[in-house]
Length: 502
Image (cartoon, rainbow, N blue to C red):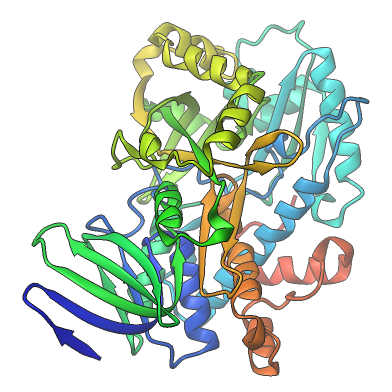
């Protein structure tokens, strides 16, 4: 239905997706496959899709599978290494690969070569304590089928084969160790997102509008009223929807607050900005072919784990090092300096203060990062690339991340590293908050959202069968099913043109 007033329109849809990033693209495709008759409206504040956190230059693009990210296997006070989070993330990434394989097989995205490539994932440490940690991590992960193909070594000669630039001119007295998984990938989530949206828009009853700023969200007569304004023309309109997904990256928190649902009370956000050093020397770029992750500095947020990262962006090989963290009050790269101040409400000020007091090392870390000179950044790079020269590198601004702060009975408030789906009790609206490993686990996150917000439909045989068609392992734990894990990996590797041998 469409009704008009002097300068505003009114439209009705079944589903509104706010934000044109990887999360909205994934949810939109899932819903349209599960229920083809749904009328879906997608609204993006910027002029193109995937311009914020999903863009290749704004995220790590690792295909976070927990193969090399040491922050997913924390060392506990007793010295043991926890692998629960790593296993959960590895499993989630396998789910994503199954869904992407479905998209490729059904010609819903272009060639997989345009968004995913095989690239070894390497964890690299030095110093006796860190080597001991990595050895324990490797031994623990070997108990899980998803990590069986991981290789561990303390042999400098072998490590030089894995990552010649990292080992070049390194002190031979250094005690070093590394693990390697050739099953690792590099993912261009910007390219993937735009491909998904381009095909989604071709389906019936799907509309996608850019330069649309969501101003208000209000539940009225059982429906959500979403007021949007065209930032180019100034034209306003109201959209009525049965279900709303807020997938606006760092911009999700302010919109969740505007929805005024009880479940959203007490949530706050702490923005962390980032920068990369981007290699400009083709000879250096060509010599490195891996994603090499190290250990984060004390107090550093997980997204700041240093890595020397081979990337494929717009068909060209690139080499990045970082990220270097910074602080900005913006929640989005293209956001406002007032984002953080305006997000502070009576219901979340206590959790935010409590989380701040509990995370003073993080505050100190960010201050130190902001004060870094080019020489400081080069010194950090040289820990991973001893032969690095500043003339071969330039600084590139990365994306904004907003870490979740939520109420906690014991501490008053805690800082959450990861992602969080916040849904209304009636399932009519949901928001995604948080950061890494976000994009890589988008499919699992959106399936969880469907289970929260579309409970009745998810229990039907029709939706169950369709989900199993898109995600063959749906309902089963790959980490506990070696045969199924091997079978699925072979299938997805073939479909996505990925390496399958060690």
